[in-house]
Amino acid sequence: MNLTISGHHLEVTPALKEYVLTKLERVTRHFDQVVDVNVLLTVEKLKEKERRQKCEVTLHVKGRDIFVEQTHEDLYAAIDQLMDKLDRQVMRHKDRLQEHHHQASKRLHADSA
Image (cartoon, rainbow, N blue to C red; front, side):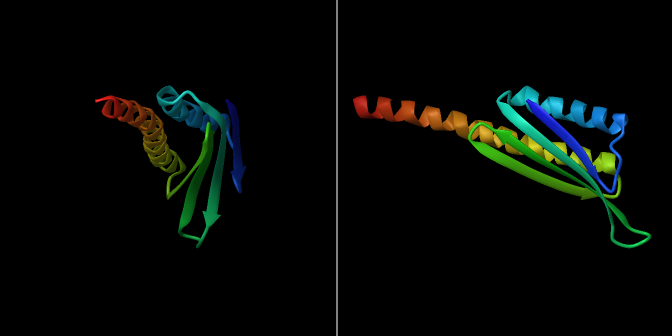
């Protein structure tokens, strides 16, 4: 698995890298066919008082690219919410792959009956 973590208007500290890696372990534990992961951490200055933290992930798996983004006032909270979204999408992708194979076997049993 190739992993790229980059920051836009933000320096990616070792603590941030480690946090993203520990959160990504949950996703890779559920689905091990991950080819490439690109993580982009961004600080957007909309107004002086309101600073938005944004996290984006592009996950390349066999047969599909999954893109997820999340904004929050706190970057760590944005990463948490993003990984929850990503985990749901990866599980949905995995279920679709498995359901596809199950439907073919059901058709074979129905045709032979």
